[in-house]
Amino acid sequence: MTAELPASLLVLERGWLSANNILCFDGDQATLVDSGYVTHAEQTVDLVHHALAGRRLSRLINTHSHSDHIGGNAALKAAFDCEIIVPAGLHAAIAEWDKDALLLSPLGQQSARFQHDRLIDANDEIEMGGLNWQALAVPGHDMEALAYYNPEKRILISGDALWENGFGVIFPELLGEADGLASTQATLEMLARLPIDIVIPGHGKPFSTVDAAFERAFRRLGNFRSNIDQLAWHAIKVIVSFAMIEKQRLPKDDFPAFVLGLPFAVDVNARFLNLSSEALVSGVERQLLLVNALRREDGFLVAA
Amino acid sequence: MTTPSPCINICKMDASNGLCQGCFRTLDEITVWSRLDDAGRQHILADVARRRREQAPQESDLRSSGNSK
Image 1 (tube, chains in turn green, blue):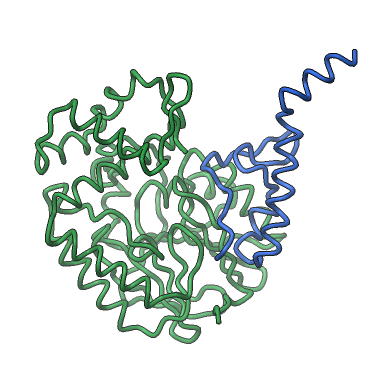
Image 2 (cartoon, rainbow over the protein chains, first blue to last red; image 1 turned 90 degrees about the vertical axis):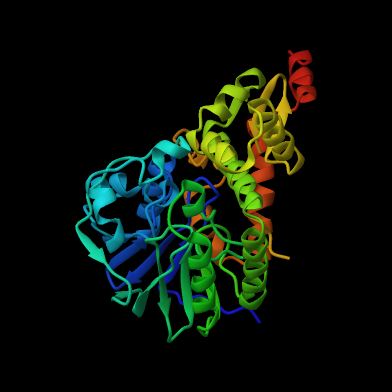
C-alpha cells in the first residue's frame, strides 16, 4: 500500500501561498528544505521551532528561488542562524537580489532579502535525515531548480517539478526565454526513469501514486506543447489566483486594475493571447469564480 | 480518499488562543498533519469545527444570549 516516510523526515504540509517545508532530523541537528512565503514567515518559524523540539536547525536548503519557497529564509536565518544553501544556478540572482530574475516584480510578489552561505549543484550529494540525497537538475518551471533524490528509500523531494496533479507553471517561454517546455519534457523523462516510492512535492501531500502522477504530468505537458496559448492562459490564471490569495479580498471594482497591475499577466496576454484588457479581466474573473478560486461576497472578490 | 488539509493560506498564529487564524489548528496539529491517518485528521477537523463555532457564535446564539439578559 502507501509507502511511509522515515521518522527522520517530517513534512510540514502548507498551502499554495507557502510551499511545504520538509524537516530532516540528524540527531540533535536538523535541515529544512524550503521556507514558504514571506507573509507566513512568522508561522513558519513557529512551526519549525515546535517541530525541532530542542534540536538545532543547522541548515536550510532550497529547491528553487520562487517566492513561495524562499520567503521564510531571512526569518529562519534570524531565528536559528542556520546555514542557507541554494542551487548553484541561482547564485547571481540571489546575491544581487534581482527582482526580475527572481520573478518578484513580474508576478507582483514580495519576499525578504537574504544571503546564501553555500551553493549546491546538480549531481552534488547531501546528507539529510540520515539519508544520502542526490541533487538532480530539474529545469522547466524554474531552469535552475534542483530536486533531491534518495535512492535507498526511493524518495523524491520534487519541489515544483512534479506534483500529484501536474507541476508548477512553465515560465521560460512566457517570459520570452529559454526552452522551458522541452526542458520540462526531459526533466519528467529523467524523473520517470528513477525508482520512486514516494514523492514529497512542493505543494500538496506526499504521494505514492507516482505512475499516475507522471501520466497526468506528461499529458498536461503534451497539451501545453501542442498549444502554448493554453499554457499562457493557465499561467495568467495561476498568477492572478496566487496574487489574490496573498491579497485575500479586494473590492470587485478594483479587480481590473489589480489584474492589469501584474506585469506578467499583461505581457503574456500581449505576447500570446491578444485579448482586450476588458476581455482579459472578465475572462480571468469568470474562470477563477468557476473553479471556486474566487468567490463574490458583498461587492468584494474573495480568494477561496 | 485522503482527508485534505484545512489550510486556507492565512497561516498566522493568534497569540491569544494558540490557533492559526485561518485553519484553527494548533502548531502541533499543523506539524503532525502529514503523519496522521484519516482518523487522526478527522479528529482534528472535528475540533476545528467546534472551535470555529465557539469563535464565531451563530446569530441565533447571539440573539438568545441577548434575550436572556
